[in-house]
Length: 297
Image (cartoon, rainbow, N blue to C red; front, top):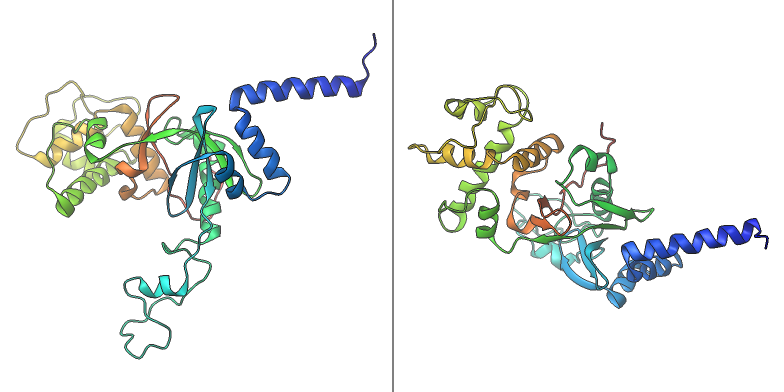
């Protein structure tokens, strides 16, 4: 029995579709088929998927037939003029009591100040395969992406529940921080110094921990040497906490990525960190990059 070229291509196509559906699941196949036919992505997702979270730039949905992936859609909600006027520091245009000039109302912005372009750029950054290769296990892996970056199919990362769980995952579980704003400032100062400590060249962070420089580790700048086995004692609580954080190789890689990509230290928080369902490693849920995408090397 002879098989025509057309029949052969059809057999190959069906075989690939079966393999594809077994890997990603039928729910994603349905989502993609309906999207390609012109249905709005958000309508499809709300019809067949489960919403697991929403932020200022994206809405995340999970798949009932594949627990290891999620799809991230840009959040297209925009602010009304009333929303804008309700934000601190903004006043109705022409208001005689307007003491400090501010930016005029922009209907393209959402209530957080992000435009649709910002949100698409956020997806474009996260879908950058070069970035994922440069910083493996730091950001969720991306498997597929819409041509216009309105959605990306990503590795699922389970968000951390709270600040205490974050401390447990970065070697600070036995440390006590002040409550409220003071504790948050203390924590952010540690992260900022840790990011600086793994930057190339000399800086204040490296000079501050110079007393703990015992031997060189391969993935660090030659001027920073840390012995993770050494008991961390001393009166300088701030330095001790930084050393605890830096003793973890995976965290050093994460701080290195944050420094090189200019990710603000405030993004290193419980709400933006989670555990990968594939690798089991701590990851940044959102790269928090909304600037124009540039090619990485």
